[in-house]
Length: 223
Image 1 (cartoon, helix red, strand yellow):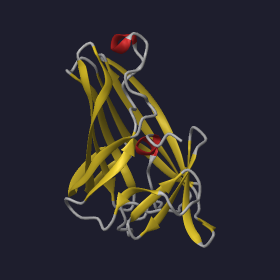
Image 2 (cartoon, rainbow, N blue to C red):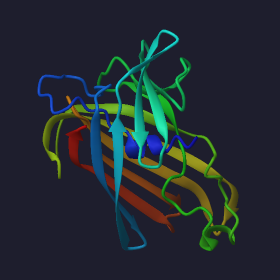
Image 3 (cartoon, one colour):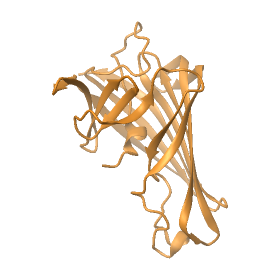
Image 4 (cartoon, rainbow, N blue to C red):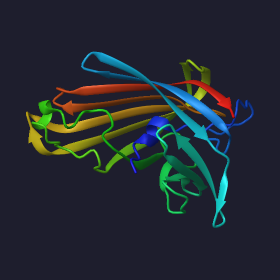
């Protein structure tokens, strides 16, 4: 299971409700569409992503909120005392996606993967990867604000929550002077909507290689 897809696709939405105060409403039959812009070596690629939020299900007395992604995967979310958990199948021992209660400066670690850099490119290591794309990396996540305004194709959202994340990965075999990979990410969530924007950057140290990606919500609808 490639959990790095979570940041790319995750969005919880409660219809077009203006009354919901949750940043992560779950369990609605909603289809969401994102535009994904990837920038690498002064070249831009634009794609789209679609995710369907399905009705909640009960498994062994626990409530789960499945979300189905365009690649055919389904991720199961669950609310717990420690936060919103996620897993590849309905199971109580999921991993923390968002820690609760929500508060400025709240901190938690979360798994990620190398998403953007082409770690097998010959410029790095002669065709051999210097870091596995399956390697577990832990990002530091921190809530930094609840009052940001974000404009995306789907609309203008006020009082958004912003989460900043970062990780430093030391390469296993230093190649062509590359010692580390840096990952930075910012995500914005709107009340009653969920994720509306994501910006992720991955680059080498020294900065020989870099890839940026911007994901924006462009539309959502009930089904």
